Image (cartoon, rainbow, N blue to C red; front, side, top):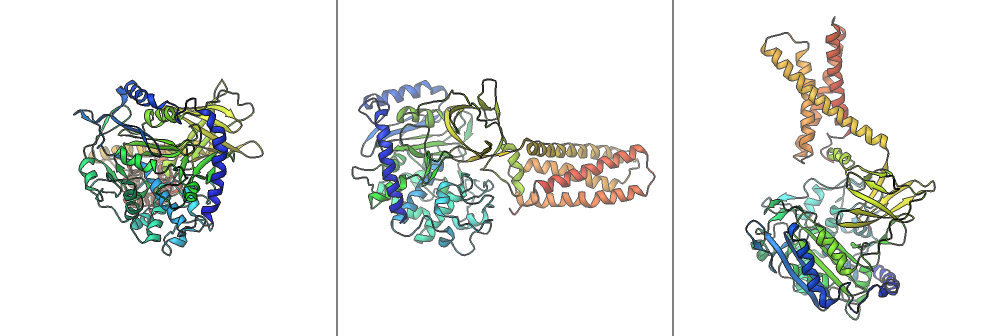
Length: 607
C-alpha cells in the first residue's frame, strides 16, 4: 500500500512540477548551460577558483549519457600529486542514499512497511531510551524526525581502531529521545544507521553485503568501499591513504582517514565515476524505471515528498533525499561532509539530468553549491522585500543538539541569535548569516557560498514556533535562559580560578609553615572546583566521558559534603571578618561547582 500511495502522489507532483518547470530552460538542453559549452564553462569556473581549490572532481550526466566528467587540482598540494579518475574521496552523508534506496527496494518486495513501528523489525528491547509511546516509523527515520538528540561521542574513530559490529554500535551509542516523533526535524546519523541495521534484520545479511548485491554489482560500481575499515575493497584501501585533506583555506589536515562504527550513515569512499553511476541510476529511463527497482512505481514513490516545510507545500524530504530547494525545478539529492571531505549528489528527475561533485576540503561550498546551482539552475531570488509585521528575531537552539547527559554542556555553544538591523533585515552575527525576506514565512539565509531557504511557523499570536532549514529546526528559547546558562558557566570558571589561586596561596603558606584555617576542607572544596573546570574543558574535546562523569560525581560529592562541615565548624569558632569572608567565598565556590555539575548533568555519563 505504501508503494502505491506514494507513487500516486509522486505522479501528481511530476505533472505539477513539469508544467511549471519547462519554461525555465532557455536552450534545448535540460541544463542551464548548453551542452556544447558545458566543459568550457566548468573549466573556466575551476580556473577562477584555482587559488582556493585542492582537489575537485565533477560529473554531469543524463540517464544514459555522461555529459561531462573530469578531475581537477591536487590530492596532495605539497607534493603536487594530481587529482585523477582513480582518486578516491569520501562520500560522507551521500552514503545515506544507499540506505534509503535499500529500504525502498525492500518496500517494493513487501518486506518493509514505511508506516510500521520500526521495533517490529528489531530484536526485542533493542531500543531502550525511547521516551514516548508513539511509534517510530521508517518514515520518521527518512524525515529525520524520530525525536533523538544528537550523537557525537564515538561517531568517528581513528583509522586502525577496531570498530564494533553495527548492531552493537547502535546499542552502545543509542541517544535519548527528546522530542515526540514527528514534532521536530533534527538530522540524525543514528536514525539512518538504524535504518541500515533494519535492512540487515529483514534480509539476514550485513548491510554492506546487501548493498553490493543489490546496488553496487548491478551498477558496475567496483571502486567504492563501504565498510569502516575499507576491508571490502582492497583497491580503495590501497589508494585511500594517498589523499591529503584540507580546510577551505588550504590548511593541510593530513592523510589519516577516520572511521565511523555507524557506517551506513556516512562511510562510503570511492571514485567520481562510481558516484556518478549511482546517481545516473536514480534518474528514470523513458519508461519511468531504473535497474534499481523492478517496477516504475517504486522509483516514483522514492521521489514523492515525505515531509514538507512549515508552509505545507514546499517539499523538504523525499524518502531520505533532500529536496534541494535552492535549485530551480524539482531537484533532489544529498550533501556529504566528513571530517575533511565534502561532496554533493543532485538530480532533476523531471529534466532528466544530474551532477555529482567530490572534494577533499572541509565544508567546501564553491563547487558543491555554487557550481551545482550554475549547472542545474539556481532558484530565482525574490528577497529584498519588507518584513512588515513579521518578526523572527530572537534566540534559538537547533533541534540537532544535546539536551540530556554529560555532553549537554555543548548546547550553549550552539545558541543561534537572530537580530533585526536598521534596514529591517534579520541576521545572525555569530554564524555570519544574513536573512532576507521572500514571502510570508519564507526567507533566504545568505551564508558564504550558499543561499539557504528557511521557513518559519507562527502560532496564532504571531510568535515563532520554529524556524526550519532542510536538516533541522531552530526552536525559540528565551534570552533569560541563555543568559542564565552563560552566567552559570562563567561562575564555574570564576570558581575554578579562585580554587586554583587558593590552592597556590595555601601551598605557599604550607611551605612557610604557617597555620591554615580548615586547610583540609578548603583544599577539598577549592581543588574540586579547579578540577571540575579543567574536566569541563577536557569534556569539550570529547575525551573519555565515562571517566569524566565519575570524576564529576566525586567533585560534586566533595563540595556537597565539605561545605556543610566547614560551615558547621565555622559556627563554633570565633573568627575574624577576614576569615568569615574567606570561608563564605570558599563555600560559595563549592556550591557553584556542585550546582553546575548537577544542572549540566555532567555526572550522567551513561546518557
